[in-house]
Amino acid sequence: MTLKNISAVEAHALLDQNAVLVDVREPYEQAAERIPGSIELPLSQLALGVPANLPEGRTPIFLCASGMRTSRNAVALAGIAGVPAYNLSGGIMAWKQAGLPTNRG
Image (cartoon, rainbow, N blue to C red; front, side):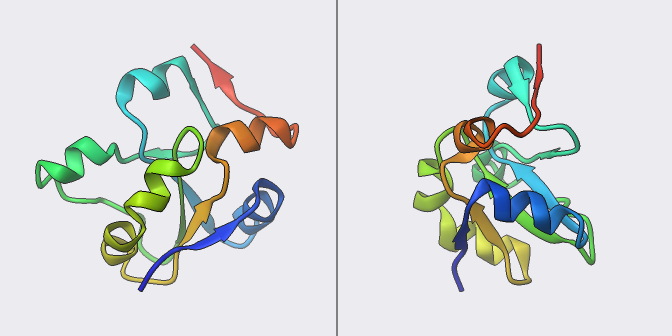
């Protein structure tokens, strides 16, 4: 199982269909800027064996800064999702380029 790449516009539309954004960036990155409503799941915590507490019954859309980290870890992320999941292609940078909202600081 792996992650299907989707655009920021597609990800935004899926949020209305019970999907959830899962930010795998580090806490300092999330503190600087994040997408409202996204949940935190830093890759470094997963590497330490911290359980992935993903909301049950929701489709995860994983994101990082540019999409590279989620792409490199797609198999592992798909495995913890346990359901079909997505990669936000281009990460938070693509989200902002699409004119979608973020919270800074």
